[in-house]
Image: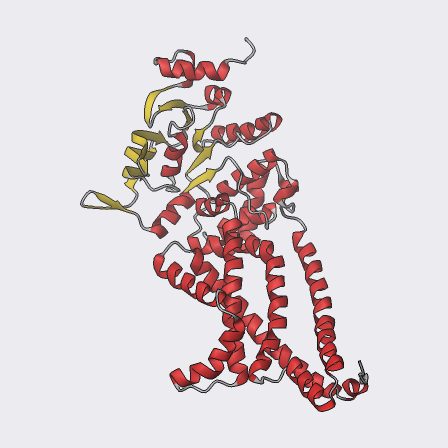
Length: 257
Length: 222
């Protein structure tokens, strides 16, 4: 197995507030990693540091074993155009879809390929249709986002990210803004991606997804990784009191098996 | 009140008005184009976080938004040549005043439009590897412009009517020509009413057309 993403004592501070307090994470190619934690634990920030939506305060992010940014005297400098090319390799899907409202579904998916990768119209269209097929929405190619359901929007957003041929996909609470009945179709798409061997890092509250799909689960608390392990173990028998409480809060209203 | 109604001279002198209207249209075309295009640039600069871009833009906006256009026109006609030694024609002085004012006002409209766009749109552009410029012009601007179209239309109507201010430096436009006719024929009611009517007849259909344009643009999104 080859290592795809690694973070090394990653810190992130917003003013006085230290959100990440030294995160060491390694993700191998083909792995699906789920980040759990209550709100404010730093899981979204960690995700956003991996594709540099947020710049880490200190620490390093490695992609394919190469550190992003250049280090001079302990200070890491990031070059904006380099970060752009990093982001094409690290796809991201958001909680609120963020589809481009003035473009059709097809145009949404073509946009990055055309403007960033400079693919020609025919190629990017073909590629886009392929991704749409992957998320099961070929019939919506000509629609505007406003005509889609939340679940469909999110699947288009996934297709848009996939069209850039990313090495790894980041999912930031992608089902949290959906009606409960629409969560399933998005999770199904994600599961399918995981089965196809896509490397994925997911922030989610869907314990079922973590249990059945993830290769590894990380529990973040107060900016550090508190527990880590395979989902069958860690979700059944958490070691720390904190994680027990977290899981209880999540399963309080679950029907018994 | 004894008043001899004299609409005949208006019709007889339609060429005088037509000549004036051409001046009005020229003034409008120049000032609205330069003003709204320049305003777009100033508005974007104003939005940028970089102090070297934002501060000059801010200063520009504040100066030209908080001084009367009429004063600017008069200043460019009478004061500017003395200060610089560069003669300004009535057209140039008026066009400068109206353009700069339009730039300042439309800059604020554009900036408000850009700011009204959800942060998630910036993030989505960024996440697929687009740089700031690409995201601004391909993702943010098309939606922002659509959103501020009604405000820009309003501004455009203002600019069209503002062209009459150019008469103060004797630029040949509709109002100036009406004054000519009123003075010659002693019929201010008819000649100035004619000006109002001309403006209404020109503007009304244009405004209706922009409503239609807004409806077309609304289709599909949001």
